[in-house]
Amino acid sequence: MSFKRHVEIGRVCLISFGPDMDKLCTVVNVIDNNRVLVDGPEPVTGVHRHAINIGRLQLTDLKVKCKLNASEKELKAVWTSDGIMAKWEETSQGKKRKVRAMRASTNDFERFQIQVAKSKRSAIRKSK
View 1 (tube, rainbow, N blue to C red):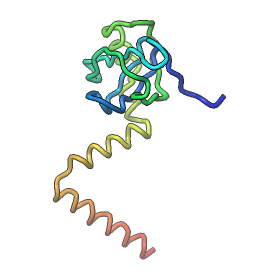
View 2: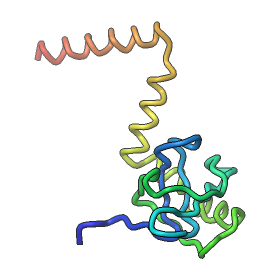
View 3: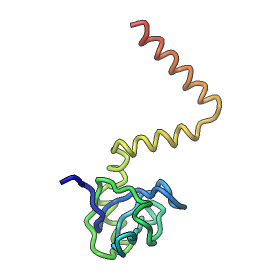
View 4: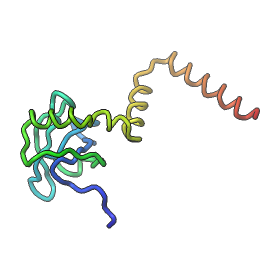
């Protein structure tokens, strides 16, 4: 079987376009072939319940056990009990996004310090 991630109830997804870009959400219901109903839960991820095109989602390996049209309260309980945010931060994609956000928030001097550290590190590698 070639596909390992399927659009299904409880699948944790990353929104890749729109106002909620780069936020995690959970598929709560499948509307049709192109659209799904997602919910954050909002207190945890900041995503409110709304319909979204599947093309705007990136499916992750994470999945929560929830029922069809689960309420926000139920989703929040499942997310906290399963530790989904901690699991996401441990994935390679979560780590890359964290580093990218941290790098984007640096100022000129911090970028200069990073550049100097990189050049020192490469000089040490070259000398070995």
